[in-house]
Image 1 (tube, rainbow, N blue to C red):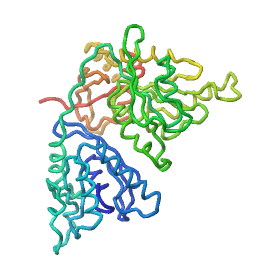
Image 2: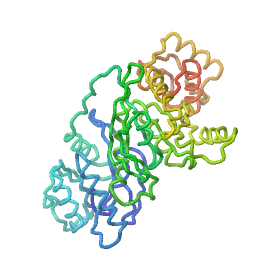
Image 3: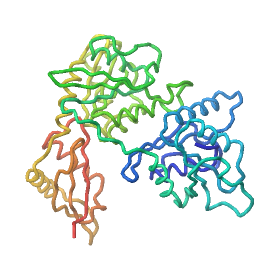
Image 4: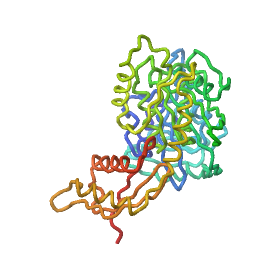
Length: 430
């Protein structure tokens, strides 16, 4: 957190390692928070880049920005207050420091832009009362390792959850008012969550355990995610952070969409977050009973569009449901148990390498004249999601399209429906 134009977004981009936040010299470019995940010193955490903190008069948008910062600060485990090394400490800097101290959370002060700071009188950063103080340059990366060290020092190592062999965790995800809570009620067979026609009734993560064929399914009901720029004022806008937490806790994400509205970029964004986290995915088109003037081609048209929209997760099963009528609700239980089993599948090394030999003989990876990737050996190195390591010369030259070719072959041969699979290429060991 910090006032506008101290380089928070540039620092965020440097730490996360991707150019995700919009950076610009104009103050106040960031309106909504950006989120990115990273691992440092064996600790995995989510970094939130907030909008600039300054006193809002009667501007409701600016008041909403300040509310967002306050809410995220309350959710956070560590607060990083960012100031500009080249200017005197301002009232907004003092406001950010005061807000951080008021939470009682561990704090770090990042004195940013040390590369552009001109020699001259500046206030000592110690006067803000935050320790430790880390000097950083987001542009050149100076001090970022020290900053991550200071953050990680305050974070407890996340313990492994207790192993429960018969428990599969399912997260109901989606934009507000697509019927997630109604679907939860239908799955539970009783009134468990508060159901309302008003979007965004669910503001936190609730869970319920259901037994199906002797196995426990734990269902997480999350608050809805809205398209950025369409988020209304109130606590509901901060649900994205909780939704990310639910994805991290789940084995399988169920993306619930409204059949009366076409899928939107927000739906694809949520599905992408599930895939990136390596979790299983089920696509659900809810409120199918509310679609008007259906004929025998309606579902075909819907399916064709969804296959196109979610081409990056073509392996995810698609289910048409009606929470109010109970349509296909039992099918979700069946798919959940099937996908949970698939995610633990292991492929014998001999079978895997015989398949690789056939696929490589049919289509070898492309390369340059004197540098040709040659895959020598493959082995499965993980589950949940199934992960395969392929030892190759020039692994950095293997094109993503060839990775997709191998992935499709693995799916066809061994049936990895409902889950992403990961292929990692490594150079030959000397």
